[in-house]
Image 1 (cartoon, rainbow, N blue to C red):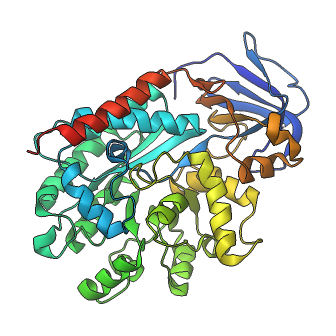
Image 2 (image 1 turned 90 degrees about the vertical axis):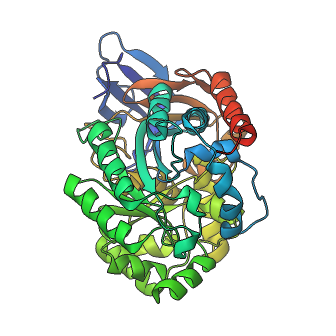
Length: 454
């Protein structure tokens, strides 16, 4: 659990618990890092020494959960702005091979601060490039998350299938399979905290079918399950990936993963744009989660994921901003709007509602991470991860606060609590100063793009 914090009482807000009925004017009480009361009207009992927050004109939601990211890519934004995924990757790999722990620390600080300012309280990260002799890159991003104050799920990624083995990445950015598995095991043992209220959990995350061997996928799943932790990878992002998997493996990407034992309630997969009807059914049958990244999918021209169909099949779906270099400056709250618009563009105006999209960004993401009993909704006993949004001013012209939040531009963030600790207050970071975080990201970009390639 997080350290003891001063109690906080939010009153007079429009409260959306996500799990349960909405409260037009209600309260949320936070004590010792937990939500202790949610209900209509003023709080019936105010803890001694509590900070009282007037939520008049505000919307209270669970903190948002980011289910897919590549924080290091903050340092390489703007690369190949008009390319496909494969073109963008080929242009980026050798640039990423230059990164060191200093680059990752700066990029992660900026990326996590940006997420916090858009209402995110829990973020994953998928880091899969580990140049030799460049310091502890995994530790660098973990330390950044501690400074910014977000709940963090770093995924120890990997690539072992370079161009000489039929993969997409150049051989210089892949690792040996035994080194990967040992480093992953070491990271789990050093950092993973399975306790209730944990601020740090590790997942195992080989990169993708076009950069990873079947052996690494299988052994990674065995390693993760031996530790009781979750699995993550990219799949079915583009039509190019479909073609690659047909040529290399004789099947489409999801069927390939299914053969390797990579579908199940302990797995969540990024993108899942190109799914067959059978794939959608299998996700529902197995409880396999999806990290939906609509802005990145649009930026790369990858397509529109079948989110509405996945939800109808009962599969968990969360939102993700994806790497900053394929989704430049994307705020997590903004992905709620993008999810609604892209689904409706493909399937019609009833394809996804504002409330379904908000649930994806909160409880859906928590389900993907296996934390739905701890985060994702405003309920007594859950962790006090709370976002309070100002819906006055121009937003006040819309009567339905959830529609105003989801359909319009992201409203100002009045308060962000992570385990009861204030991370954002009145739109300003209260952990790492915003200007410092922004400068760290800019410095990481300059360092990455000007350092000698080794």
